Length: 114
Length: 113
Image 1: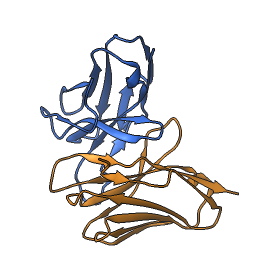
Image 2: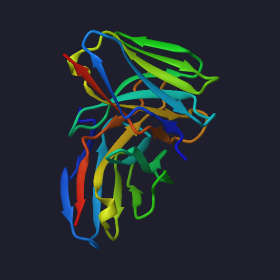
Image 3: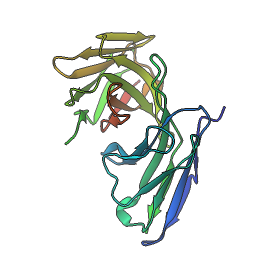
Image 4: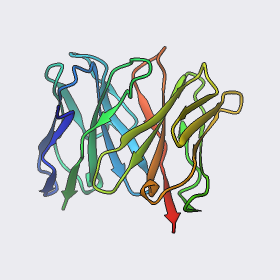
């Protein structure tokens, strides 16, 4: 059982380049999330998807787009990368079941924008 | 506007003593609270949670206390062990509302030998 899988693990981009971060979960969860973690800022929610076919903005959505391709996959796209988007990106999935750990995280994608 | 606040960026505790990590929230819609532990170069892992219908939840060495009137929760670790050194994130969500899970900035816990 792989849980939440993110690809790639590392990436370096030049300013203005585009890129899609991939995320897949095998736990049949309805909800999926993209967070970014920056030093001193904790985990900030970029976008989330409560179910297949729906997406909503989180705390810091500017500069990003998302696509919930199916129940398993939730991708994050940077159309024109900027140095301010240098960060560690985490994908997560959850299910609102009482008593169960509601959120499982991937190991992160470390993205550097030069 | 920070909805989940962890005001202590770091905390050092002697091994064997109690570690107390604090968290405050502002959104009255939050009714489910979680603590996550994070090691460097790994994703956060779930530690313990509490529903707003309770004021305490215990799991082994970890206990979370919730004070709804003060909009405050705390995580107690007793006794503290070297493997507990990590960053701890407090998070909150609403089962009645949308699916957002909002995190605090984290507290780095150092367990001293």
